[in-house]
Image 1 (cartoon, rainbow, N blue to C red):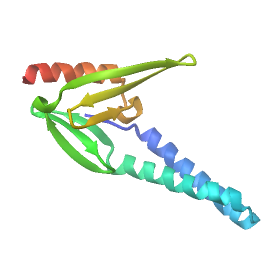
Image 2 (image 1 turned 90 degrees about the vertical axis):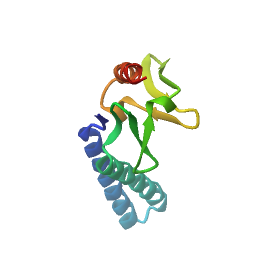
Image 3 (image 1 turned 120 degrees about the vertical axis):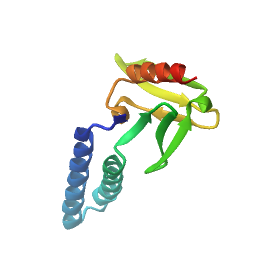
Image 4 (image 1 turned 90 degrees about the horizontal axis):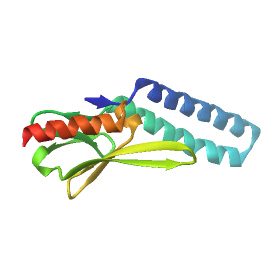
Length: 136
């Protein structure tokens, strides 16, 4: 079971509160441009934090397959037989390394970041490949 780290959700909440506070300040000051920036930022960060608390588990595996988050807060179970490929996309840019876990089912491509999983995508991919090999 891989889930979002609680610290990230807390930081998103704090960011939403900060944006809301700035929005109120700019409203009182009569700064329309600042308010136009603060309201969408507050809503976006709040929605992201709410999702992290509603559905913290992003990826789960068992003997029959995996369960992934689908949509905002839904879940979908995918049997091992439907999974075509599990790979990690690693990119280097400006001296930084980023990785994304990609699970291809043919019809859908499920993408997870290390922040979604709370672990390294390379390690998660190795566990999933091993479980898939044992199941088939």
